Length: 294
Image 1 (cartoon, rainbow, N blue to C red):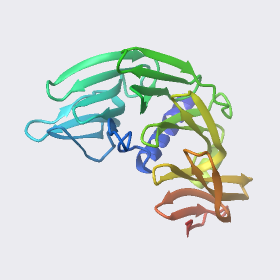
Image 2 (image 1 turned 90 degrees about the horizontal axis):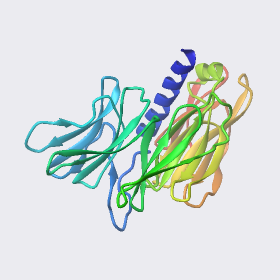
Image 3 (image 1 turned 60 degrees about the vertical axis):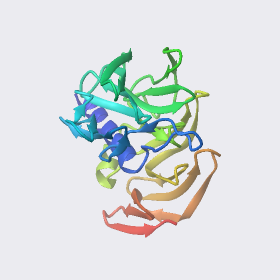
Image 4 (image 1 turned 180 degrees about the vertical axis):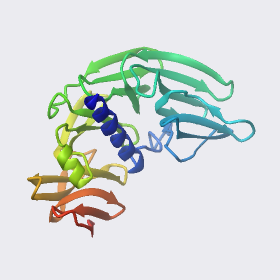
């Protein structure tokens, strides 16, 4: 029961971070816009109305709100990701609030028709799009898989992704990066309850997964928090030292080039949150301060 509670708490934290800090994206291809990710708690204009993800029954749900007519709720238990070209929705819907399986659906606005495309017997997020493929990634603890549904062939393929996780009880969370072209993967460590309680964050590793090549890059271990800037830049804070005497360093990482560089000096304490150009730090005494990191 404690393990399940930890998984729920850490996955929810990662999903919240990804949503709030801007890992949900806008257009998929700047030259030829196709699909956009439906945002959480924000409206996206679509044909004859707008769409959004909003929390209902303690879980995100997909809603389509036509200009004239009643709001349509497309998911009932939980929505684990939704994309649209303005005329059609592709979305993942779980069988319950803590899914044991997820189905991919297609909803056509003009006809109001819903079509089930496939079902995956695992908890997955719909987190990417590239070259006629929608990508779903597993989450939680245990073995991790990447699934690709091809819009032309209407077939789904899968591949196990063997991340070098901290230990077997870690929890994986995912999100979209660089307009859906890359996938953010966070490996939240287990066994850090004392650290999390003191510094208000969960230590984790960051990976960038290229769903097309199915290869991933380790960005950093021992990360306290991160945020996205200018679509292709990740700012994150890594830490070293001990729980009683930690040190933090802010880094800038370019998603496309894979290059990273230190930003500013090393701080005493833990950088537990970013907001705009400011970083929030808690020291070993529990005192907090704010610094500008640009």
